[in-house]
Amino acid sequence: MKQEEIKDLLKKNKIKFNSHSTIYATIKPNVGAIKNGIGNLLYANKTHIIHFNSQGVIILPLNEMSGKVEENLITIIPENEILSKELKVKFLSFQLNIKTKKGDISYGIRRSVLGAPWHKENLSFLLLNTSNKYI
Image 1 (cartoon, rainbow, N blue to C red):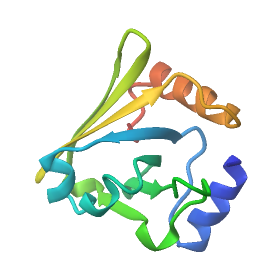
Image 2 (cartoon, rainbow, N blue to C red):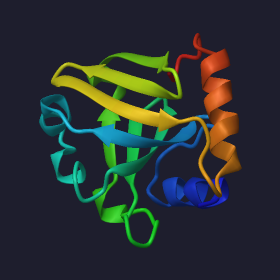
Image 3 (tube, one colour):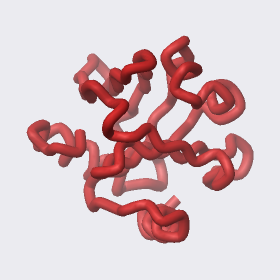
């Protein structure tokens, strides 16, 4: 999926787009995810596109068969519900932890994604700019 497609999709749904704030991620099922309203995305749609902006964290679930975003399942975790966001470096990957008032959500993030060169660029940007108020 191209980043322009994501940008158009967010604008279509009246969600603000920030450059260098979109990455692919794989959710790690846990109670915090269910309490935050994304329990229906845990097993059928494990791969998500995560976008950070001033509204909060936008979760765009991908259809496992077609690779297209499931527009009816787009979820926003509002900024006022988020306590902290942390991007940890692991040995071969990264881990994104989103702590909310309702529980913690955890994602695994690969270093690169085939067909999405923007993921690696945005991941580097997020890692270098940890003081960025959107992550």
